[in-house]
Length: 263
Image 1: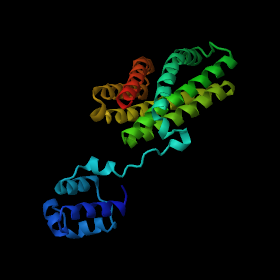
Image 2: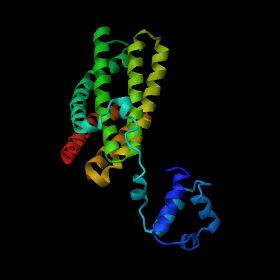
Image 3: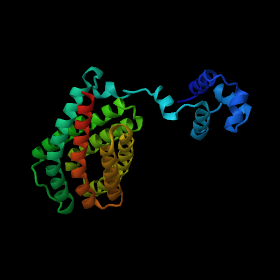
Image 4: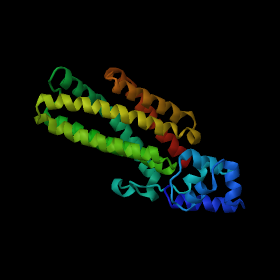
């Protein structure tokens, strides 16, 4: 929440409790001028200061700020229909399974391409596999953007969106790289590994944030995401890939669990 909305909200909560600014600051150990400037929207306080003020007022930080959460930021771009959320989550599960299966072909192809500088597939078949991979991944990861929307987990929503865009761009690159020089290919392979390593760690953090509402499964998924990301960032690609396959299955199960809870 940004100023001046933040200041107005704190002022409203203070008045609900029947406190003056002087009475509030006595309990917060901050000066009157600071609270005056916060409520007037003149300064943006640190999150610690906001939490301290809300605790004195008897409000929970997360509960207050989820009220102003603006969900569905990517709905129009991704064709997410709020009236068909659960049908779209079912699609995410189906395409997650397709992506899981096609992943074996894709990883084997990329492995031989990098290590032996040869293709297992004809160019036309390779392009088809990439198309299916990009399409299935898009619908699959869109499911977690929807989940972030449902549970007001903006961090998960935006990281999942960034992962989707990154995967799409690298997928398109893979197709065009059929005609690139080896030097460019090797450089972008390194960039891809690092990018997905970092994004996997961030996505894992977003998953863990679902633990409070969905139990231990998102915690397990989040921890595996972080482990896979660390493996990739340190170029332990084989270990990263070995972690990703069971991780994808758990992600599919998590989406299915959410469908059952919400249906």
